[in-house]
Image 1 (cartoon, helix red, strand yellow):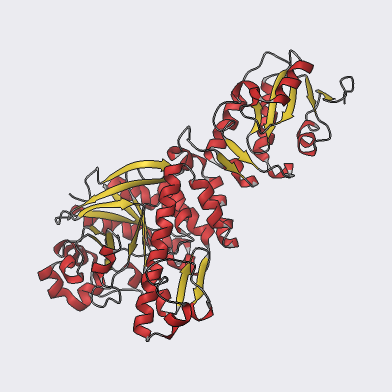
Image 2 (cartoon, one colour):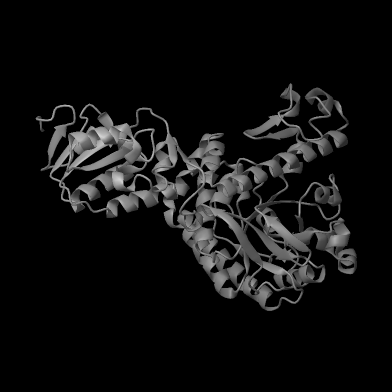
Length: 511
């Protein structure tokens, strides 16, 4: 298997741009989405074999540190034997060190040959990351450099591993697009988005999400996308929804060394906790105070094991959400754990084509609709598009609020409207779904959603307004009959000029 080969990835279930699947490597298949723990090539607080026993199918280690500290031994034994891991091993070639220190004392050609020699399953060329704060001109220069050395590394590949093309560009998303497309044309079967750590440390999740969307939109659907340095549970659902298949981080150990406990909604200092909201083997056998009193080495190892469990649990929950068709709901529930993360949710609304590609046309479960942002989920967008194309022979339209009885043509509200206003086009409406012609009321998700019956601000629903305007115009509606005390509906009906408006409870009154 070579980096230029095809067929290294097989997708299974999909939702939004997320998917479950598997990457075939020389040391077995890796089930995705997958968290890839960072393992030090020489010094390990949690042995790599224990990671394997915990169910992690792949780890990542630093080829540059290996080259510096165990070059001859790694060349003789191979990276798998050196770190004690019999699953897939990915190697980062030292890009992070370049970002931190400005340069390293080895060239990209020599590093590529070393990664091949030690038997990496997934290798990354020695790129030049585009960190936070650099100018656009410098970012463009680094993108050009990384593309050049990446092509050279792939052309000289001889170790049989998958080569992952390092996508650079940072917050300059046009450069991310250029980088990803260039690597795709070069023949890379897998991509790895670089430089996210500084964005995460500064809580700039919005920029990170836009970087991921730009990269995923610019590479083939068949190519898995790795995200460097993103391993906190809070970021995993959003990253997966935007198209990341694997992601690595040393956070489990870095947090543990600082006494930090990973929870579903953030991190906690172990000394400030009175109980563990977890049932992993560490949490079920210790109270927080007991764990805090252990010698530093034992405490760190225990916290690291819990942190790994917490990360894996979130990956499993995200995978299950994909299988159930509930990835959108899962992402939104997790995004509300931090305002800056919720801010990044707008990227889902900004990329309709990307999210639509993997979202099934029909789902077994009802869509849950809460906030205005839910008008942008792919299933809802599709329904708006369908309603805008609908043609009616009637020129008068009756609009009623959707009933909890679904489909709409089985509801009492529809029966009453039809009896009172025969010959009219009857539409239900939902703030999220827009106009629902009664003839389309059994189409997913019109008959397969739940929403809260609360006041909604009509100004927050531009999709409703666009569908309303298009429907009225294309169908040459001359009269609209509706409840004029309905503030949401009145907002849109009142801006429709040249059309009679009648209150549904006062048959003779028009406005």
